[in-house]
Image (cartoon, rainbow, N blue to C red):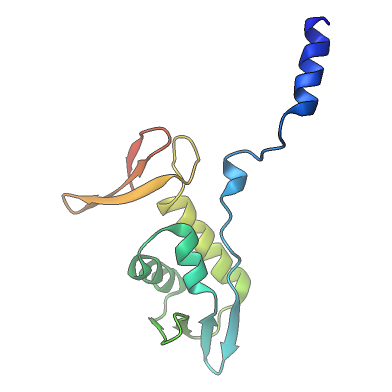
Length: 132
C-alpha cells in the first residue's frame, strides 16, 4: 500500500469527533412573558453550561436589558418588562463572547478571575490571560 492509500484508509477509520468549538453549546434561552415580567425558564441550565456565578450572569443580562431582575424559588430568572427570546439570546451571546470564550484561541475553557479589582479571563487551553 502506498502513502495515499494508507492515508485514505486512516481517514475512513478515524472516529468522527466534532471540533473543540462545537462541543460548547449554550442552551437557547426559554423565555415567556408572564404579565409585565419575562421569565427565563432554563436559566439554571444556562449557568451550568457557562460555569459562571449566578449573580454575575444575572447582573450582566439585567444591565444589558436595562431592567431589574431576581431569581425565583425555582431558579428561574425573572426580568421586569417584556423581552423577546431573540433579545435575550443576543445578550447571552454577548456575555459568552465577553466572559466565556478566549479572545486568543476562541475556546470556552476559561475561568473568570478577579485580580486587583480587575476581571480577567484565564484560558486553560492556551494559557492566555486577558482583561474583560
